[in-house]
Length: 360
Image (cartoon, rainbow, N blue to C red; front, side, top):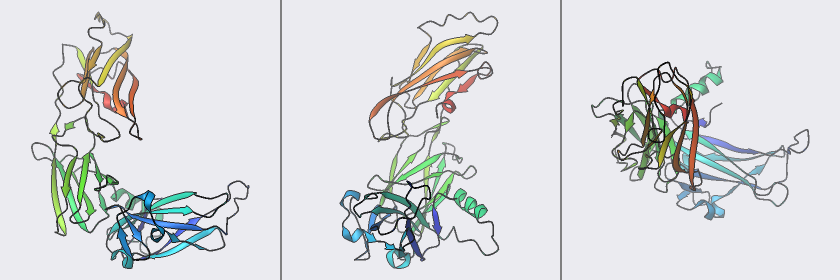
């Protein structure tokens, strides 16, 4: 099934929470509880006011009673509310995050759940002839990789290299003015483009994901959506050049180290913040007499701004390497990450080996 619940704009939909007792073997339905739903619009991080039928800028922890709609107990373990997207938001293509909560005192108090709903004209419901719903949903989910129509203005972002050629398979992460993640799309392999629905007059941030083959002069970038119904934005990148191999018969083992989370997510690790160390030579090819001492067994990220770290190792060796770099975890706490990688002789048979693929 899809990660999103897909609907066409303007529909009235039933928001439903199901409660079951997972303690009893029968998983009996739970009735008689008090439950509410809150709706967050992802394009601008606003919450729906069920009383005023409006959208408010308010922090999640400060939601008031008007932002929490009581669900109707259906006496079968489900709690529901019918929400008219046309009345609530003009029936335009958008995406929402529905937050459910049990508010009654008891065993289920403060239990929460959430789900995303996408209202888009591009992902229409299947016809009666499309009986293979799973196939249709899989196709719809695949389309969300390069198109996400959560706002009223369709903006096409195209990633190009310095020669103007499209660059595909790069993740673009979109954030609203509050820093909340809106969506992540992957640039099309042929056109280098993605299409995202955003709201006019709102300033968004786009973070270009790490790619070992390219670097970015500016990352992330901030832009404001204009008034036109369809708009185009060109993002640029520069092909990364692997430095010349340090000697005949050597394989340059390299990685472009990037921060995975926090305020610097996607940006290159700084000077000296990453190292690549040769821990052990497990096997040597015939004739290899290189003395792998402390002088040539470690490399640090340099000042090129790319987070590049590399070592030159004799082709045909089998080695164990350790990659270490400064980063932060998902909570924003600083940590030192380390990965141990073993490369076979076949990995080191050529002039260069991209170690980045082993660090995911």
